[in-house]
Length: 173
Ligand code: 5GP
Ligand code: MG
Ligand code: MG
Image (cartoon, rainbow, N blue to C red; front, top):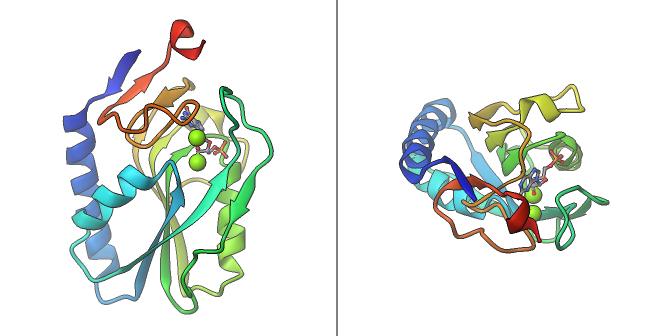
């Protein structure tokens, strides 16, 4: 395992993004929606860095299955989504890779008639994108390596690591 972004770098960037978002969304009916499970660590830190009143909700989307680093079919579960009508919605995910997850989920949230809709991610694999869409906010751009930590998993492990690391051959066994 090789550390790409350490705990200190993540913490200071998340605080900085939180301040930017607090300015952007002050006096607006903000709802932050985290995409489970990968966004859960970012979601917990980011909402505490956004010092304006806001609501929080989650939805679940997954395309990886078990010990795989290539995506399968995307499944989205909106059962726990709060009412987003006329809310300024910020959708938060761990990573923008091909962009398909974000594109699909944004389209589904748009159907709930939000007042506005934007996206924020911790990581952006800019070169991997297969869609026109870009994340509205991102913390770090990274190269096309499979990474774990700070919410991101491999086979549902490594999510607790406070840093972002890339996995090497022997870790993927
Ligand atoms: P996309 O739909 O943009 O291709 O992929 C987004 C989703 O794939 C993310 O929410 C994340 O769950 C997963 N993903 C993409 N790249 C990585 C990666 O490098 N590591 C991990 N752990 N998950 C990834
Ligand atoms: Mg995900
Ligand atoms: Mg995953």
